[in-house]
Structures are given as C-alpha cells and as structure tokens.
Length: 333
Image 1 (cartoon, rainbow, N blue to C red):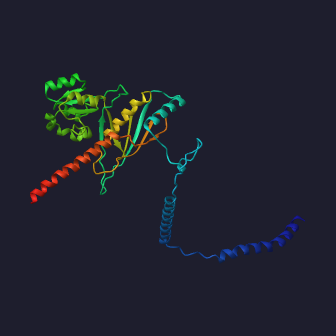
Image 2 (cartoon, helix red, strand yellow; image 1 turned 90 degrees about the horizontal axis):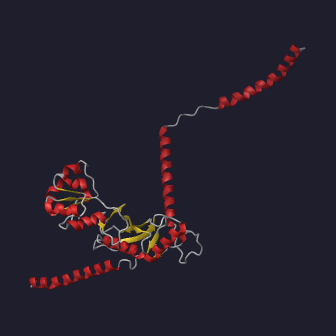
Image 3 (spheres, rainbow, N blue to C red; image 1 turned 180 degrees about the horizontal axis):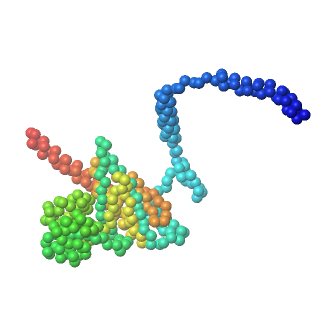
C-alpha cells in the first residue's frame, strides 16, 4: 500500500513540476547578455554630476547673498531677542567701563581681572596697496601690572654701560654678544642700542627682525634711561591677521578715569601709523574683560587730540604749498 500510494502521488505532482521548471527556463532563455559599455560614459557622467553640483552650490551662494537682513530701527524690549534683527548698540567709554564693572559684580568673578580691547583697522590704500602690519611699545600713564621686561643694551662705552646697569638693563655689552644671541644663549624681550655700535650689529638683522634696534620703534638713541623705561615698563602690541590689534589695557578694579586714560594713550599711539593719504584708520573698537562679553565703543569724540593734530598738519601743508607758489612764479618769469 505504501509503494502504490507513492507512485500515485508522483503521477499527480510530476506534470506540475515540469510546468514549473519550464516556466523557470523561459525567462533565463529569453534573457540575453548586454554588451559591455565603455568606461568613458561613466567618466562623462561623473563630470556632468560634478558640474551639476558646482552649479547648485553657486546658485545657493547667490541666493544667500541675495538675502539682506536689514536691522530694525527700534530697540529690543526683552532681554532675549534675535541679534541680527537689531543694530548692535554702541556705548561711550565711561558707560562701557561701568557696565563691565556691573557684570563682574553680578557674575561674582575676580575683581582684578584684566580689561582688553580689540581694534579693527582699515589697512587698505589706493591702487590695491595695504599698510604693512606694525608693532609698537607704548608707556601707559597708569601701570596695571608689576611685570618687568628684560632689555639688552648694546654699547661699547663704559660710561653708557654703567648708566644702563643702574637703570635696570638685564644684559649690557658690545660685539661679543652677537655670537651668543645667534646661538640662542641670550634671550630677552627687547633690544636697545646706541647709534655708534649699529654698523657692527648688521649680522643680527635677520635674527632679531622686528626687535632689531631702530628709531621708528624708539629703541635706538642716546637717552638710555628713557629707552629702558619704555621697554621695561611699556606695553607691546602687534597687528594680527593683517588688521586686528588685541591687547590688554588695564585692570577692572582700577578707577574708570585711569582705564579711559590708558585706552586713549594706546589709540593715539596706533593713529601715528595712519598714512596721511588714507581715510579713517579705525573701523571698530570693542572692549571687554576676561569674563564678560564684548561691548562696541562709539568712536565719535574718542580721539579729539589726534584729529586736531591731523588738521594742523593739513593746514601746515597747505601753507607750505601757498608759500612755494610765488617762488616758482618768480623763477619762471
């Protein structure tokens, strides 16, 4: 019975298996292999995709540039608001310093933290020229730190060497110091020299670079005590990123009058590097403490003395031109 039953089942299932296998063979037989495509088509497609992505990026940048968010004229009412909707407020120096002192009291931070400024300059000139980045040292009217810089004095005169030692020079000497400086055995913060020894210091020009003694930086002259006081107690600042000056100017616990006096002294020193042919030299001025946000300062009336000096120089230049004109006319006649 078992063998007979199995044969009966096979007779019933076999036709269906043949039909299923035939159905599987048909699509395999109908499918034909495709010819291989050349590689250049894929390379062209990749190039087109890159061009399409570049065009899309350019269109996105154009759309972003086209969106102009104009600040509103009114002031924000609440403490929390979107900054790009409003123009950044600017403050007078005294008002900004008093705000920094209030921030310190509310935040319970250290009262003797430093006060910093960021000065943004316009270094562009006519005909695609720029003002070269500069460095300077200024003696502030009110000192805010006990740090003293190490100064080396170049001189071969015994009397001048004795004066330099009495006024706090870290190292004093002549030509014998050149070898030690080139080998980095002597490291100081500043270098001062008298004019008589300058021809012998030419090998140090490439080594010292900006610290090489020069009259522009007030590090070359006969008044050794004055130069030592400037570079031992003075504040040195440099132009960073070709247009920004970042430096500290005071301590927050100092009186407001002293902080303002130090700020004006630094700004006046910076304005000395302004070319006579250029326009406004300072674009933006921000003041802050070590733990506070930056406050934008109003530059109107902040530099009255410097503006007066520039006006006097322009008037003197016009007077000299007026004096030269009649002399030239007489010569031509």
